Image (cartoon, rainbow, N blue to C red; front, top):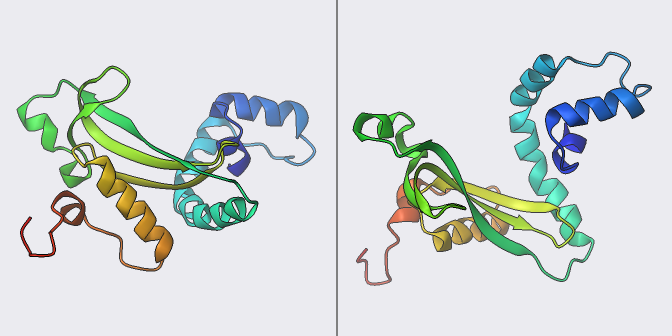
Length: 163
């Protein structure tokens, strides 16, 4: 699963590659459906491995990292009641490759020049990019701290206490 994530191929193409070249390492190869199910079950493990791999990649000595956001639309041009299906995990936002309104999430990625992902943060689409960057950098400073909540990202307070 890790090799497939960083290989830059689709899951189907990755399984074809494994069938062709790595058959000796995988004598009992899973079907596409079973592989997808196993990947979903192990998603938490993959998320826990990201900080470890990122630390190793940053230790390799890259001169810089690129941080950018990506729109992750769930529904296009939604109306009224459908917008509430995902609760607070998604919201209405503006952007994406077509610069249009979309309903979904925003993903902030930190990437090395070689293409290795060293960190990411997901938030509702209405969240501003600077708060996502603050959450990522805060996570790097204290990975064991309580994750920031949506209201922390959307409504920062100034030193005088006003929103």
